[in-house]
Amino acid sequence: MKSVMITGGAGFIGSNYARFALEQHPDWKVIVYDKFTYAGNPDNLTDLASRFKGRYTLVRGDIADREAVFDAVKQHGIDIIINFAADSHVDRSIEEPGTFIMTDCYGTYELLEAARAFKIERYHQISTDEVYGDIEPPGRSAEADPLRPSSPYSASKTGGDLLCLAYHRTYGLPVTITRGTNNIGPFQYPEKVVPVWVTNAIDNQPLPLYGDGRQMRDYQYVLDHCEGIDIVVTKGVPGEAYNVGSGVETTNLDLAHAILDLLGKPYSLIQPITDRPGHDRRYAVDNNKVRGLGWAPSHTFAQAIEKTVRWYRDNESWWRKIKTGEYLDYYKRQYGGREVK
Ligand code: NAD
Ligand code: TYD
Image 1 (cartoon, rainbow, N blue to C red):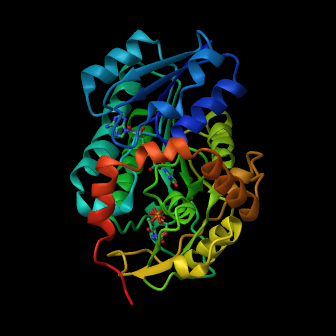
Image 2: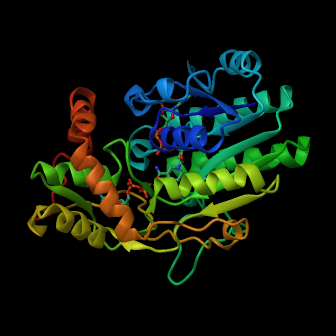
């Protein structure tokens, strides 16, 4: 049995990956280690304890807390750390950068220190295509390109990546990195664009659209990303980063239209608002390196968005519970008074 620590495993991608890993690797024990910030949700993991008896453990802890990290790594005899834990939303990083630096940089440092102290066999960092900054068409960011992050979120994630690469070079730590594009699918906290728009549209509420809506993102289905991560964890070369993304970009306006079409709602729900400061126009990745390990996406954009919209339509109780209290305060702070006529 291998003992695998999935930090941030109660969040969106981490919980999808924890389930995927337990299904794919019968010889893995999974220890989800999570601080349970507003984005960490026990409802994302409810099926795991009964489905994978004896192979799944949940530990509450902060990755920036050395004692708690070292205790967990020691107590569970961790062989592999896969770090999903992060503050992850660009708009929140513009509002309050401090927690991003603490978790995404300093927390990464503490995990790397634990990996070094306990000589673990693999440390894998979940990173983002946002570390490259935006790129003019028809360019695509490749792994060796310079990192030019634009937001406090992407700058903090870049700090995490650079520490990982430094620990590989300096201490020979067996580190790999995946830089994923935007994920969509079940259990995404309704602050990212797709769950905000889908849940608003279901309730006939406006879909806030930043600026001219011509910004482009590569929206991939979360399980495609999980497969890419898994291939890199098991077959990737230490010291290397791998882009994981579908290679297909969609404008925000086209995304809004796709969601409204799937739900049979009018385009008049789209509400232009003032743009996000520092807003990156376009992300696009070259995914040939991870394809070289045998990965390919299984979902087209149309399939990914259809499955995603269906999940939010079928699981209203999951997101209605979130869209109360602190969430409503955030929503008002974030969007209030920004309408553009
Ligand atoms: P999320 O916000 O849904 O979940 C983050 C999880 O990390 C939560 O469970 C939270 O409680 C936990 N966490 C936060 N701070 C912590 C700390 N200090 N210690 C322990 N746990 C902590 O995020 P997500 O969208 O699932 O993203 C997961 C990872 O993937 C992040 O590293 C993010 O940068 C990266 N990523 C996300 C996307 C995307 O589209 N969402 C794309 C590429 C890369
Ligand atoms: P988001 O989901 O926040 O991800 P990213 O980390 O790529 O910024 O936003 C995706 C795109 O959607 C981005 O171009 C900003 C835009 N957007 C809106 O137009 N309205 C919104 O309410 C949100 C949250 C994002």
